[in-house]
Amino acid sequence: MNNLFDKIPDTSFAELSDTLVETTSVRIERIVSFNHVSPKDFWYDQEQNEWVVVIQGRAKILFAGENVPLEMGPGDFVNIPAHQRHRIEWTTPDEPTIWLAVFYSKRK
Image (cartoon, rainbow, N blue to C red; front, side):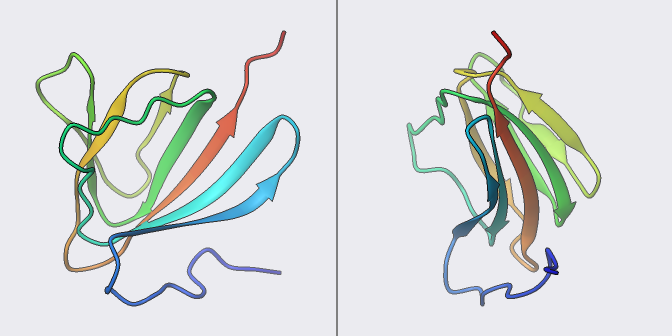
């Protein structure tokens, strides 16, 4: 058995991702962020859909074409369609922000 809160690294890095489960159709990751901001002019543009939930901490995600970032806290989740460009604008600086991300493809 494992626990999402085990082995949280120290605050000397901005973001860390661990793959928890991976099959041909789905990948589940635990993402831990400390005061993380996506690099200037960087956008995630992923091949798969991503369903993501904040487990601990807070975050702001900006979607391309939007002016105001989506603010997320514990329990908040969002489904991000494949190729929906997005970036991390902010995560809490005083505690780790722990995300659970499920990447999946649409059924054919």
